Length: 224
Image: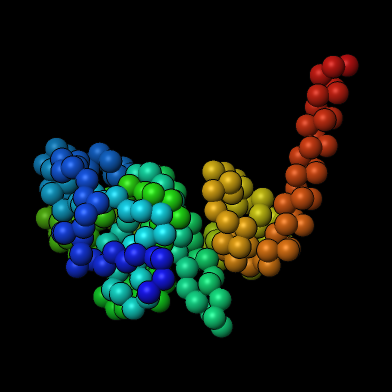
């Protein structure tokens, strides 16, 4: 076995890195206004965990039962193609990661999830969320808005891959993930952006040069 350690959903209860209990629904994004009763009901099904850098949250062939909200840290979702790791998503603080087909169809996932940093997570069990949505209007609205937002994000990403140039994809990445560019490896970012590491280095250099010239022009204008 390599240096990565694995965190299966069956191990969550006994994980050594459990955080203190007392989680409230206020720690996850507010996709809808919830009543106090709804917030308590939602809080009852949430589970907080800490994971170490390089620890797997979802591994190949595992069924993904949870949507994973990142309170602190950075996650990467990836898969293997022709023996190479391809990065599908980065998820940093304030965002939610999950394996769509696995969580909806309850089937093993080939999309893996790894912590790139020591991270604090909030696990949202999808089945539990659906069950609560049948009883609570606010939670049903929360789930609907969450799914709508994620469908839009996936469409925007697909359009970016289809229609934007390598440089445009990188510039979008900087806008959408301003902190990730300095935290993820060049190889991981390159595979996410559908580039080779060498191509990404050239694009980054070109963007940096343009930004430097603009900054120099602004400073010169201010001095004049």
